[in-house]
Length: 112
Length: 114
Image 1 (cartoon, helix red, strand yellow):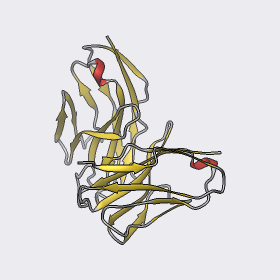
Image 2 (cartoon, rainbow over the protein chains, first blue to last red; image 1 turned 90 degrees about the vertical axis):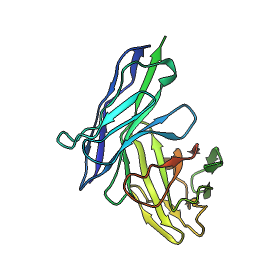
Image 3 (cartoon, one colour; image 1 turned 135 degrees about the vertical axis):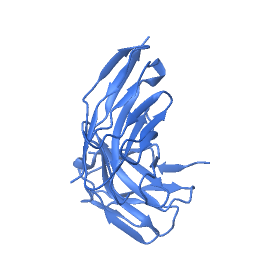
Image 4 (cartoon, each protein chain N blue to C red; image 1 turned 60 degrees about the vertical axis):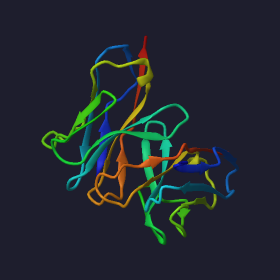
């Protein structure tokens, strides 16, 4: 079945460091891919998405490119801030759009 | 705009008790779903609905029932709670179930079963 494998955490970075969180997927057909962010005590919020191969999603300085050849959707940010500290989830929706599959989440802490 | 509202925020049950977790959305979304979040396992889909009167099972449906009598509401019922159902539960909704439509999440219900 469909699944998402995400880089284990936790990740601790200094402010202004470069961030990469790896995500690979297994899916039938052509899934849509997402990154969600979760702040303490809150639900998940959409960070960015890509719906077809070679699409790049971007938001708030974060980027991820849908790579069909490597079945990957790695999250990157060039310069992290303390306010980026959160848990990040990679996810896919199947070709029907009805079922979503999430990775296990990566906790990011950014220290000043 | 309230978005997705879940109640209660916290709940403690004894084994064998029943309860209903409430979820309501005011965005006129056709698609609604329930997830549980457990440490080290991410979010797993319990049940989903693509419109009023239509429900279907997700990855982990056992022990849970749902119904969808209106577009706005999608309650999740635990008929006989078990300690394995201790988790954080999230309700999420989306526009018509098509590729690329993201989920909008509520703030969750933390359930403990003793």
